[in-house]
Length: 254
Image 1 (cartoon, rainbow, N blue to C red):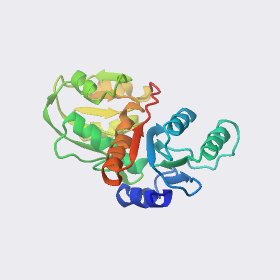
Image 2: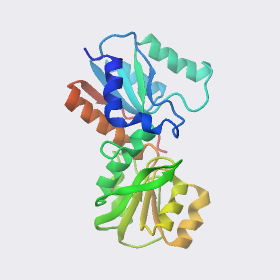
Image 3: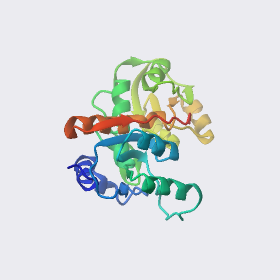
């Protein structure tokens, strides 16, 4: 029988959650448990929001696996929308499991590994220092790649990049990636001489630095650059645990 306890052990067997305990302010792992019953279906989504919860419950899932969970750094009072989310999970016996930075960094099922593969980065190496850990990847591209083609490759469904900044070479020979909100890590890409930097969000503060340093950057969208990890874990779950799975797409456009 597959329970939340067994799933927690299985997720931790490859997601290296403990390795990020000191640097990740989110509560990685099982955030809300169920009543101890068997899990027959797992839903996967980027965000722990009420819409994801409702669609997971409607799909008959016993557990929802997300990248962005409910708990971040400081304790939250059970009021307002936070209370409604917790209440819904408990009322529907729906367990919640979250994995943040370990899923960004993972070399096989991670968001950044998937982006590196989509872009054709050869032998990707660690990139992007964050609290003492490199969570992204960089390397040379298998073939020269234009900014427009790179933007197409990382687009998920109808989600198009939030911003494209073609301030460098017409044909990129190297690339670095960090999913989500990592605009300021572009300074590391500039320092390391990378042609193209791909992340989820941009910041007004870096715009002129991009222009003046002649580097290309794509802000693919925080959501769109982080669908890949949960989908990769979903595929592994279906293959190794033989459980029914379903991806719940709730794009934000951001």
